[in-house]
Amino acid sequence: MTEKIEKILMRVEKPGRYIGGEINSVMKNPKDVDIRFAFCFPDTYEIGMSHLGIKILYSLINERDDAWCERVFAPWSDMEKEMRENNIPLFSLESGDSIKDFDIIGFTLQYELCYTNILNMLDLAGLPVRSKDRDNLSPLVIAGGPCVCNAEPIADFIDVFQLGEGEVIMPEFLDLYKEYKAKGASKAEFLRAAAQIQGIYIPSLYDIEYNEDNTIKSITAKDGAPEKVIKAVVSDLDKVYYPDKFVVPLIEVVHDRVAHEIFRGCIRGCRFCQAGFIYRPVREKNPDTINEQCKVLCRNTGYDEVSLISLSSSDYSQIKKLLIDMVDWTNEDNVNIALPSLRADNFDAELVEKLAGVRKSGLTFAAEAGTQRLRDVINKNVTDEDVLSSARDAFKGGWTAVKLYFMLGLPTETDEDLQGIIDLSQNVVEEYFKNPDRIKGKFVSVNSAVSTFVPKPFTPFQWEPQLSKEEIERSKEYLINNLESKKVSLKFHDTETSFLEAVFARGDRRLADVIEYAWSNGSTFDSWHEKLENSTWAEAFDHCGIDPAFYANRRRNYDEIFPWDHMDVGIDKEFLIRENKKAHEGKPTAHCRIACAGCGANKLNKGDCDGRH
Image (cartoon, rainbow, N blue to C red):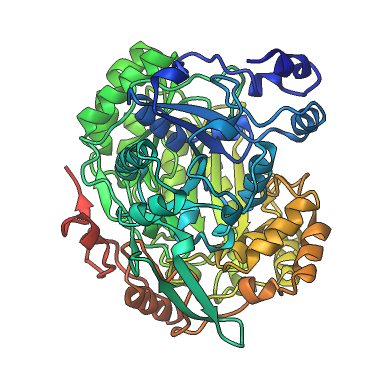
């Protein structure tokens, strides 16, 4: 760290965000490597250090003798002010060097409302924010993560996108970069070559034409780029790289524990859930591999909690065997096992028994909708009795806190469905008091988190509109006014945030001007309620002559060309249309282990789409 940086740290709120030097961080000599890689997370240290993807790719790149990956997080407003006033460019935590001098600057795109932070970080680094204004091969600005499935709103700012799983793409990409850097190739030459790697999307190699009604007329690849960019996938999770240590943060972060992914993909097919489709096909990791990797990670980091993560942890086919094996050493080491993303229809008394010796954390169940009719519409194959039975088993097992997830504004929703959210939450409370063995002196806590439906690409609901902001606020008022139980708390997601998310989730390249205008007028950290400037965004849309409702609140036709139609994540559009039609008929679809619905994801993994051991 430079002396200049040290001088400003005492004037910022959390200096621990910026000092580096954590246990297991990687230090190298810049002279000994061919590639310096700045891994940028466009949010605060506390958010970024909780993300599993950055932990995996940080270690993967640093395993190479020819590369050094260093971490960079978005500085909070107080730190940004000090950096700009003292002419300190954006720097990495490991070396304290300006990232402007690195070979590759890589962003992870976890959320649409991080886009202004990306521009701000590039500007803080002293770089032009537009790709066309950065002529040299170095630094090359790349991005990966779930938002790449529709990267069009920020396509003008990024040189290279990686579609799919970084463990597969990154090694080949770095090898190519090293080769082209060594021979002094131009940026254009490298981009044309990189476009041939599966999962690599070069936005400058695609021309977009629009119709008079502002829908897309055509997407045309050029200079040898593929017509469709095909997602890269890991075939075998047991053989793919996984780190044996994580960097241990110096300050408290959001998820301060070992996180371990037990499988990828999802069998369920909930029609609103983008992750459930874009992470297909389903691939499980062997329980013996998971157990050993968790043990090593806990002992190499000192963490006393391990979270077994996936999109639906209780769908892991050997969850009970895994827990039995893990409890042997977690009890001995006093390590807690957390199981997020549990489903109410397969959380049973036996699973509670397996967790009996484990320190109790809160349990979360995603009911998503308040009535069975609406759950059939969204293909959430969970009944009221599933939720109540799961709560009953949990309360008998000693749990006293349950969190329920719901959504409002789902397609075909009525007030009866809203009332169902209230009724189901209150019925869970009643289940607690029916338990004769409940812990005396302790009271139940049911927290119902209610988010707003956001239509996302590559889901059966990608054609659906989001409710207007006025309609969303009316639904929230209905829930607040009709809730009776003091044991139930309602927590809502911010309406304006959900609206912007919907705009950028289904947006096109014309939104780049909006993003740049909002950023240049002070918008950053838009996912933080206290930082979101609604008036600035309204001004940005108005200045650029763009109606945001065109993206958020408009129903699409089945034959419309989407901004993301040149991306192939494995899910066939014809399948999504069938599922959308079934939703409006109120017909559910059985999950993948009951019957194949023909989504198409198996073509990405040699015909296999259920990698159970």
